[in-house]
Image 1 (cartoon, one colour):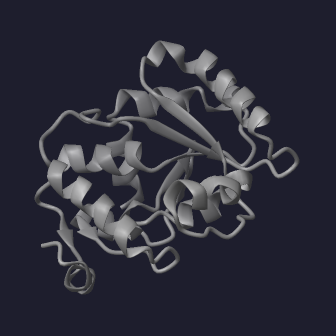
Image 2: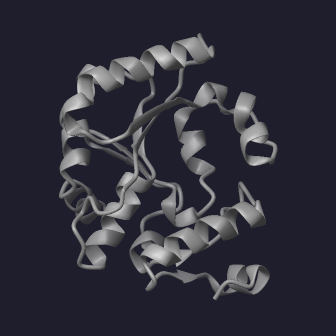
Length: 190
């Protein structure tokens, strides 16, 4: 399934360009993550263009030596300069500083991370916990849920209201997705 996943995500020209230029990005413990990956797969399964309705492309990295907002902004400026020709929104996020802002933004506590992969581990929906970099895949819950279109709440981040909001957003764009029965019973989303 890993080969299929890489073939699918590379059909998105922006994913392919980002990964082709990976070495120039120079991100410590860097990963291309989240929506640009799983949404590409779901778009292909729905017969849509691979890039359809993907609002941004997320890059996670981990730099515990400098967790300042200024440092993260400098990394973002570097990324913007290198990838400006793609004409898409690309957001770089230092996972070493997420615990500083997460609760004020999402209203839920968030423990300090020790790596970028720990950030991937904590996406709200288990099927969406994926990250790639050239020649590597990180998918702590595997790829079956993603390909089967099953939305289940991540046990590492059991925030019901946030999960429900995210699941509704996904169902609006890909109505064939389904919420895992246990999660559906708890949320009231069908």
